[in-house]
Length: 230
Image 1: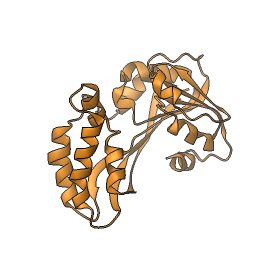
Image 2: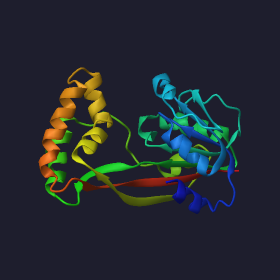
Image 3: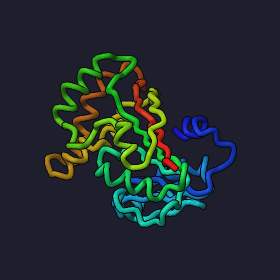
């Protein structure tokens, strides 16, 4: 993602200060160090911030996406990774425009698991008919951003880039990945299942679909480039 952002913006030197909203444990925040001299990550979860990676030039602030504790025009770049669907979008877009400097960039990207296994097409059916039925997605706002929605908040929708990528997993690694999805964490948080029972079911379900020690799985998503209107 960072390489795509660098190429799109045509960056020849680091951005002075960037903000990563809803940073979780800081993976996307630390990645921004490749194109920014200093980075701030924000999240509402104190527990996740406590586990965030510490690195020179990176700091973390507990804050919601809709109420950012920064002065107007503080940042040249804001990123949101895999989180916009949880926000009050109208309030967030207004806050993002406020803390962006004139002509600054808001870049929103995601990365979705398609449930497709290159070596075994049966996996996609299992994912759709078994996994998603047992662990349905929690309510979220998945509607795509619109030009009018962005314009209303002083942002110009410049481009939406669509991409795909592949990830290699063993059966155990795939189970570990699926346990990080909100579908599973919602079931565990509600007390419907224990983490141990979820993992046991996942490994038993996916292991027979692996003809080799590892499988190749398709991911992908969008990168949306918005620029603050001067």
